[in-house]
Amino acid sequence: MPNHSLEETEVLNPFVKFGFCTNRGIRIENQDSYLIHINQNVASFAVADGAGGHQFGKQASKLTVDAIKRELDSNTDNSPEYVSLLMKKKYEQINSYVYEEGKKRNAVMATTLALLHIFSGKIIISNVGDTKILRIRDKKISCVSEIHTVAWMEFMENKINAEELDNHKFKHVLTRAIGARDQIIPFMQTKKALPKDIYIICTDGLYNFISEDTLLDIFTNTTDDFNELCYQSVQKALKNNSNDNVTLIAVQVM
Image 1 (cartoon, rainbow, N blue to C red):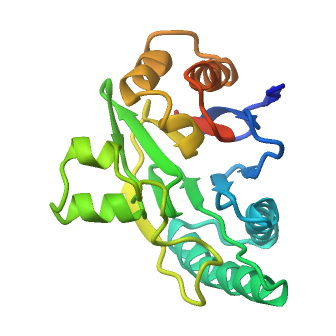
Image 2 (image 1 turned 90 degrees about the vertical axis):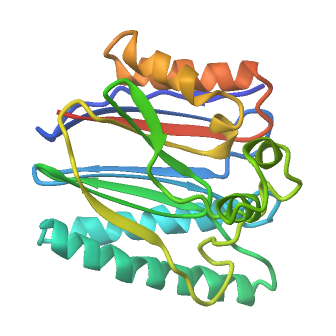
């Protein structure tokens, strides 16, 4: 039976409020891992989705978020400029470690990663793979991360249209993932964080089975309990026959 994890969270940072939910769905194992790391200066959130079908997907995603947590635990400079440099280096270090671990096991170890750092007035968005970061602003929803799949690359190059994108046979084939190759190029941007902006980090087990318009309705027209809204979103994806693990974190800038 599908299981869900719903945890009450306490806002320890004056810049944000947040909630999350994860569910293994129809899969035997939940290969998604997530991170919520809060202090008074920066709130950090991450979701990693172990590459589907690979034997060590769970280990790859867990190694990734654990490594980021250790780095944040020991970091003493919480300026956006330093954290940005720190995370660029961390992407490279984690990728090298996971790649070498895969070689030792003669197997593919790979995972996506989507990462948010929210400061007073600024936000750092970064990702590798197809775990999305969506933003709700002025009652409009848009994707602010990159999507690293073969199908999306062809769409951006105008080789296919939106309808072909939805049905593309390589829709789930990643062009970038942590551990897949010995080198990695993460997408990373620093943006202005506006009050009331909502950011949703979600795996493909969610966004392939629930529309962005539905997410917009859930997070703009109902309760302010973000744990409950995340739970509702996951349940809708499961009712729509999601065939994967389902995880999301939702964060609002205060």
